Amino acid sequence: MGMNTEILIESHNSQASRVIIGHHVLEDWPWSSWLAHDGGVLVVVDPQVQPQMEALFHELRTEKKFVTVLTRTISEHDKTLETVAGLYQDFGENRVTRDTLIMAVGGGVLTDVTGYAAATYLRGLRWAAVPTTLLAQVDAAIGGKVAVNTHFGKNLVGAFHLPAIVAIDTKLLTSLPLREWRAGLGEVIKSALIAGGTLYDRVKQSQEPLGEMTPGWAHIIAETAQLKAEIVQADLYEKDQRMFLNFGHTAAHALENYFGYGTLSHGEAVGLGCLVALYLSERLLGLNDTVRAELKTWLMRWGLPTVANQFDPASLMNIMLQDKKARSYGLQWVLLEEIGKPRVIREIDPNLVMMALGSLGLRA
Ligand SMILES: NC(=O)c1ccc[n+]([C@@H]2O[C@H](COP(=O)([O-])OP(=O)(O)OC[C@H]3O[C@@H](n4cnc5c(N)ncnc54)[C@H](O)[C@@H]3O)[C@@H](O)[C@H]2O)c1
Ligand SMILES: [Zn+2]
Image 1 (tube, rainbow, N blue to C red):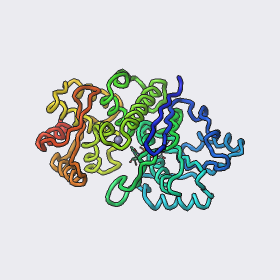
Image 2: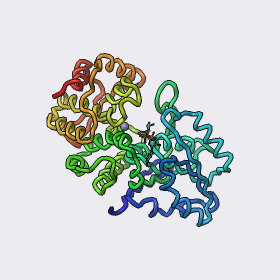
Image 3: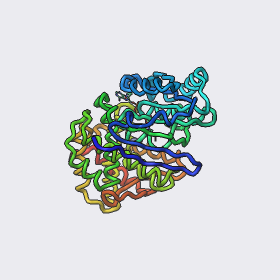
Image 4: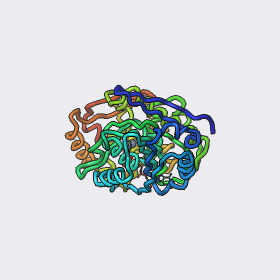
């Protein structure tokens, strides 16, 4: 399925992150040359994908590399400092040193938690991310943000710690359940709208069956991941461009919070959040309403909701205002002037926001 794509993300403090994307990345990547002479690798792997990883572990072992494999199921509920403390214990027991490469193989929860442990143990260890969900492949594993939750909210304790390698092997998604597939589609849709160009055309014309890894999906994933890597490279510390990646997320976060995390998947919430952002873009930036109509056809094609029934826009508005209080810069919206032309808008008339949220309840 084509060549591997490679993008380098560089930061000021001489960290660099090599993002490689393709259908044979795990086999093609010269892993053993990346391991220090006697440092070896400690792998934290999700049991769902461990069978697909055994060949690589075996290869490293036959090259006399020291490989420790920890199989861990880490759900959003366990995305905590307690779980990180458990990993520190594992690192100690397995004699992790400054030369050990930590490899995180799993969804966004596992890469966030393991990445945070790697960022903090011995004041920062080299790590590699091998994302295995759609969401992690196009978003979570790229860009060096690692974090855990506290009782007060998601991702409140974290760090910027770029993985030395992000190996995005689309083959690993073969076993991904449909629900998890949909959870990552919000990011694909958002990226197509803010990027425009070939990614937009590909998503628009896509006839790919959900849940089946095809060459068409491999292209969409590669281009979405590449977009994230390029934006992160241009703006590592989220001063300007990286904010564009929040397109659809201002309303999505409020919707997830209102309906309860887990009721609405992140992808479903982002799909609806993009509809809200497009409604506002029409009113404030004169965006053509055909874009919103097009987005609805994508959502329907992929089995994502286009309406949110039985909700009260005023309560949603309250959740947003709480969010606003929590941020020094107020509530930010990313809107579109045109497809592929995002803009950050800081304050929007609450009445207009209420109307935009209300539009989710209408079947048009
Ligand atoms: N660091 C960032 O920049 C960033 C960005 C976006 C999201 N995130 C975080 O990502 C997390 C969500 O990640 P997620 O959507 O990947 O969920 P997840 O990590 O919970 O994985 C979802 C489920 O898929 C299973 N799974 C993983 N790979 C599989 C495979 N190949 N086949 C079958 N099952 C598989 C897992 O066991 C799990 O049950 C959130 O905590 C979010 O905060 C981080
Ligand atoms: Zn998202």
